[in-house]
Length: 264
Image (cartoon, rainbow, N blue to C red; front, side, top):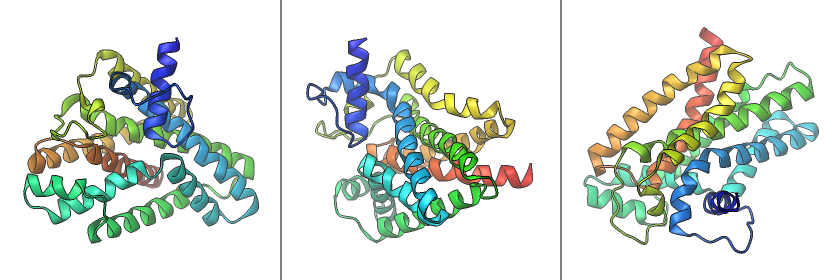
C-alpha cells in the first residue's frame, strides 16, 4: 500500500504543482509505474476546476466562472500540457525534417505558431464549455453537472494521451528528457490502471445518459490520426506530443457533447 501511495504521489508531483510529501522524488522506476495514475490526476485537476467554477459562479457571471476554472486548471498543472501543445504547434508548424521539428520543440521559447495555437485552443475551449453548460437549471444542478463533466473530461483526455505510449515508440534519444522515464516498457498494471481511472467517470455519466459513450468514437479517431501524423514526421512521439494530445482530446470531448446533444 505504501508503495502505491509513493507511486501516486510521484505522479502527482510530476503532472501537477500540488505539494507532495518530502520523501517523494522523480524516481525513474516509480515515474514509469505512475503512468497508471495519470487519468486519476485528471480527477483531481477536474475537481479543482469544478470547485473554482462553483465559487465563481455563485459570485460572478458564467463567463467569468469558466475563465477562473480554466485558470485554476492551468495553475494546478503549471501549464504542463498547454506548453506541450504550444511546442508541437511550433515544431510541426516550423520544421520540415525530424531533426528540425525535435529541435524546435525542445526550445523553451514560444513562437508564432505556438502563440496562435494557444489563443485558438483556449477560445474554442471557453466557448465550447459555455455552450455545454445548461444555465436554465438552478445553481446546485449546474455545479453538480459541471463537477462530473470536468472530472470526466480531464480523466478521459489524459487516458487518450497516455494510451499513445502503449502502442507507439518514443523518439527522443536524450536520456535527460523529463518524459523519458514514462516512455519505458509498461506492464499490464499500468495499462489496466490507466483505462480504469480514465473510463470510470465516463461510464458513470453513461448511466444517466447513454450518449456519453459515443464520445469514445471521435477520441479514437483523433488518437488514430495524431499517431499517424506523429509517426509520419518524427517516427513516434515525445512528451510534447502527449501534452498536445491531451489538450486536443479535451476540446474534442466538449465539441462532441455539443454535437451529440444537438443531432442525436
